[in-house]
Image (cartoon, rainbow, N blue to C red; front, side, top):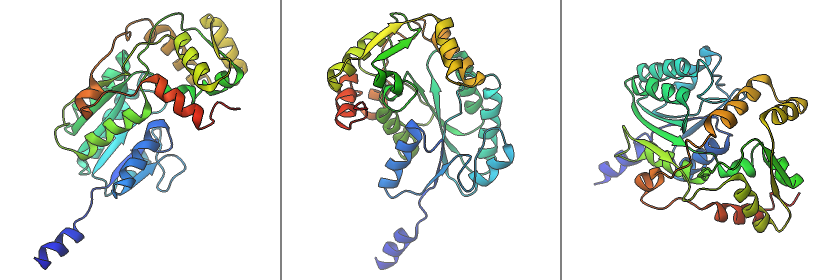
Amino acid sequence: MAENENKNKNEKKPTTLVLSGKGKTGRRVAERLTARGLPVRSASRSTQPPFDWEDRATWAPALDGVDSVYMVYYPDLAVPGAADTVGSFAELAVRSGTRRLVLLSGRGEPGAQQGEQAVQDSGADWTIVRSSWFNQNFSEGYMLDSVLGGEIALPAGDVAEPFVDADDIADVVVAALTEEGHVGEVYEVTGPRLLTFADAATEIAKAAGREVRYVPITMDQFASAAAADGVPDDVLWLLEFLFTEVLDGRNAHLTDGVQRALGREPRDFADFARDAAADGVWSG
């Protein structure tokens, strides 16, 4: 009996490499794994060892001793060449003995689906988490300043989007990394209802107790303003792609990825807005 107890104590817990470990979902995944007492290696250009998608020499040291990986490609899987890069990384991971890979992908992005296929072809035990737009883009991302300024000016028209909460994404990812039954699954995750950006602004204004309105603008107006703010050309290209190609109504429907992965309903945008407001993120 004592021998079995000592064996259990000495069992090595699997280590997970979390890419973009300071990002919206990576940070949440790392926190959840750590809370479970599981070893985590959060990796970015500034960590030791560093990880850089553009420097393949950093890949093997980051993978050393790792059992599973949460793969987040920066800036987005839609970027030309991303599929070849993530495919090469996945193949190296498998050769290094890292078999379980969970990839964050995007809905309605042909380039992202090529990246998904590259991971699927690598020989890994893979899970794909294909996500809609994050709720947290309004509280932690590039739209926070617009919310604080009271005006969300975007070239989004009146297209509806099933915004999903980053906490739900993190819960799905952690389940896929730590539980059986998720290998080979594509979880397309959305929130529980469709909202336009005007609807989202209304929800935020109600929760924050301040005026926040959505102002539709043209893509040219958006691009000019972004360039004036110093947005890099590669990021500007991505934003133009997301607003002109992906946000065209193709994703204006709900999916059951959260329900299938977790056995519960996804978090509603109103609940996200209430909690973000309570945290003071929109108080300026």
